[in-house]
Length: 276
Image (tube, rainbow, N blue to C red):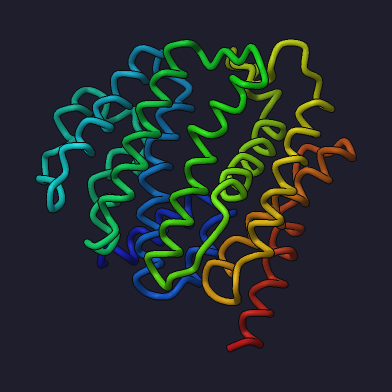
C-alpha cells in the first residue's frame, strides 16, 4: 500500500469529521491537507494521552517540534525514533508514524506544514506544563489559537498555494477557534474527569456556548467568502457538523448521533456529485 492510501486509512480510523472532506480533495491538495491533519493528530494524541504525565508530554512534544525544525528535504528514517524510545508501545500509531505524515505533502508546501506542527507542539508543551490552566478569556483565546486558530491560518495558506484562493485571516482564526470551542464544550465532563478544565474562572456552559457561537459566526463568514472549489467543499463539512453539535449540546444532548453525522455529510457529497 502506498503512503497516500495508508494515510487515508489511518485518517478514516482516527476522524469521522475530517476523513470525508479530505478524501474528496483533488490530488496534491489532498496529500497536503492529509499531511497537516495527521501531523497535528500525532501531537494531539500526546496532549490528550491518558497515561503519560505532563512533564513527559511536554518532553515528547518539544522533541517533535525540534525535529521538525531541523527538516531540510525531509527527515532521516530514524529522525523521531530516538525521541520516542521507551514510549513506542504506549503511543498511538498515528503519533509514532509522524515522520511519514510529514513527508506526505508535496515538497513545495511541506515545510509550511512542518512549521505549523512544530509551533503547535511547542505551544502544547507550554499548556501541558501548566496543566491547561485557563484563568481568563485571554487564556482561552491563547489556547484555542495555539491548537486550532493557527490551523485555520495554515488551511488558508494551503488554499492559496493550491489555486490562489484568498481568504480573510481573522475569519480563518475564528474558523479554527469555533470548531475547537465546540470540542471543548462536547468534552467538558470527560476533561474534568482527567483533571483538566478549559473554562475560564467563573465561566458557565452558557458562557462557553456564546464564545463558540461568536467564533462560528466568523467561521460562517470565512466559508461563505470561499469561491466554488475544493476549499469550500472541505470547509463546509466540519463547519456544518460544528453547528449541529452546538445545537445538540444546547438541547441537552451529548453529541450528534452517528446517523445525524452521516446525514449532514451526505448532503454535501450529493451536492458535489451533482456538480461534477
